[in-house]
Amino acid sequence: MRRDGFRSGLEASISAALARRGVVFEYEKHKVVYTSKPHTYTPDLYIPSTGIFVEIKGYFTGKDRTKHLRVKEQHPDMDLRFVFSNASNRLSKASKTTYGAWCDRHGFLWAEKTVPEEWT
Image 1 (cartoon, rainbow, N blue to C red):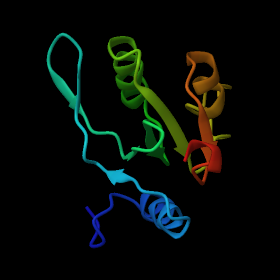
Image 2: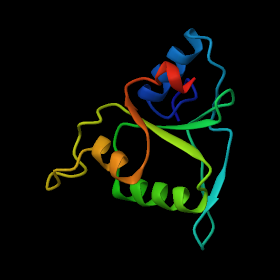
Image 3: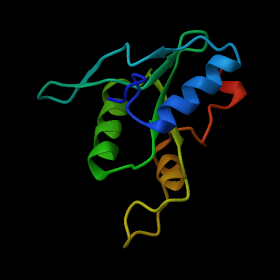
């Protein structure tokens, strides 16, 4: 945890941009339980006015991707979206699939570097 209370510079800058736009949001206030062996996932942001949860990712690991697929499967009504620092990053050196393409394949909406106005 950084001194400003965020886990990354990307989270801090996106949160600051939302605050400048007057968007009310909650940072890491919600817990989502998933899988047969109880795990807890804490989405980065929740925008109460739209009911959208936003996960902010710089690096999108295999473990992250598995977790989000399980959360989606077990909470189909949860509107979870991603903001990447670079959606063109590939899942691995050997993969041709980008972060954005992975989201498209699995039905997640995504954006790059900022939360789009229409999400707020």
